[in-house]
Length: 243
Image (cartoon, rainbow, N blue to C red; front, side):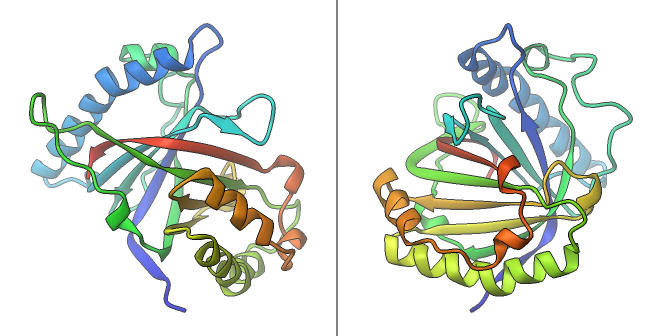
């Protein structure tokens, strides 16, 4: 089985709205005010010879495995190197309306493994009546597994089992169910990260995901994962800042 290892670092920013903000408010301000400023900042960094993001995607969530959703969405930005954590969480002192609506958020450095690409099913077209980006895409059912490790786990063994045993199984089950994209991200600094890693599973519709779920069997991941703390998030829309 061939797994493509991304040579760029995927920085993840987990986003949750403040108690007084609705999900719709958060998303509107994210798309209208925050994404354009991030796009511009990355372009300036590259023009100045600094490490700017080569890609920027925001995934939105609309349901989860728990009554209270852990997150409303997450931003992914790909850099040449892992970005240094900010001295304080982003948005502690808001610089735009989005950060007034979002809880302060932190950076999470991961290494990305593309198991099933499926990018041909995630096409996005630049806008023609407004600025080309940000734009949006939908027409899929995405499941994000945010995976916490059991206390005291050996991360080298954990990640090896994940890639060598669990990934082939998930790929087999997804293929049987009609899934088209499967990506795994491992924390570069797992002891300081909110999760040990994340898996992204894409299907054309929710019923295909349900079929895949019915095929899944224990394969030893349960010896490494704290299932009680695992967040399973579902979404069907993404905002594209830098394609």
